[in-house]
Image 1 (tube, helix red, strand yellow):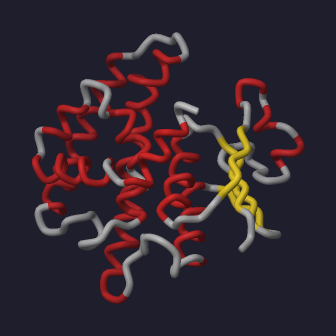
Image 2 (cartoon, rainbow, N blue to C red):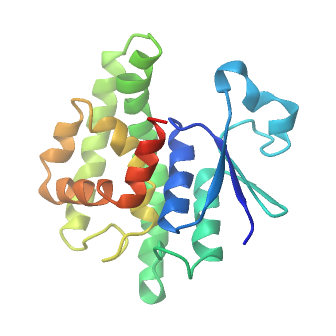
Length: 213
C-alpha cells in the first residue's frame, strides 16, 4: 500500500481532520511537521504541494492533495474497504452530502472564529475581542438549534452511523469544549450527547495524543 505523508501541524484544525480520517481508516502515515512560524508553508518546496501555501498537504504515491475536506473524502472513498466507513451508501448519501456541506459552510466559519478568539489568541499572547465572541456565539446558537432538531431524528448528522459529516467537527469542538462556549452545546441534550459520542472515539484520542508528543 502507498505511504501516506501528511505535511501539517498537530494544532492545526484542518490537519487534525486528516489525522482523524487516517486513524479511522487504520491507515499508517508519516507526519511531516510544517513550521509555520518559520514560514515553511510559504517555501518553494511546500508550495509545490499546495500552491496556496496552507496546511495540510497529503502525498500518497504520485498524488499530491490539499484542502482537508477533499483529502478526507478521497481517503474515505479510495479506501472504502478499510476501517470505519465514514460515508453513507444508498439513500443516505444525499443527507450525507448535505450535512458535510453544512459543517463547512454553517458551523466552521463561526466555530473557527470562536476558536481563534478564545483559544488561539490567548495561546499566542493576543487579546480576545469580546464583541467578536458575542457576535459569533449568537450565530453558533442558531446553528446548534438546527443541529438539536436534526439529532433528535438521527443519531449522527447524516444518518445513524458516524461519517465525515460528524468527524469534520471534531477539531473545533475540541477547542471550544475548554471554553465558556461549552455551555451552548451542553444546554442542548441531543447535541451534547452527540459531542460526547464523537469526541470519545479511539481514532480521535490518537489525534489528541499527538499534541503531547
